[in-house]
Length: 139
Image 1: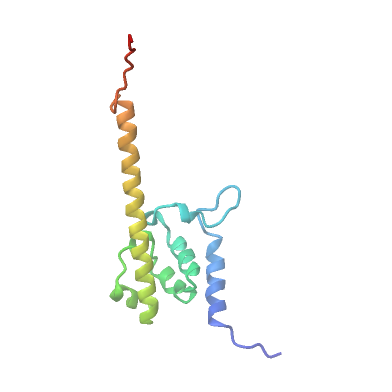
Image 2 (image 1 turned 60 degrees about the vertical axis):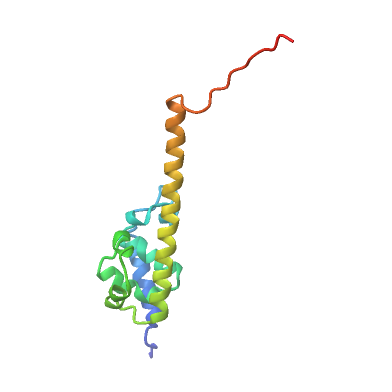
């Protein structure tokens, strides 16, 4: 019986699916993609693969996995490093770099918000802030 050659994208998908079972972020309820709520610097190599899939760039999963690119390494990728990972398409490199830049901006914004809220909490705990006193009029 003749079987057509395997589709390369299907092979990448199969690689991803086999790796998916190894994901350490599956919650007890079985929910996937919990990596969305984690800082990128905490992402595992597998979570980086999830991210690539979300951008329809499954063709790079095998090389990213082979090089064990985790979240910290992802944030350091530039054009040369992407080329070394097999991202030969200039358009794909530009897309990945753009997404990394967006992630950095979002993380910076989140850090500023956290800092702002922690300052407010510190003020509340120390009794800082405005003190309002009531003066009754004798009129």
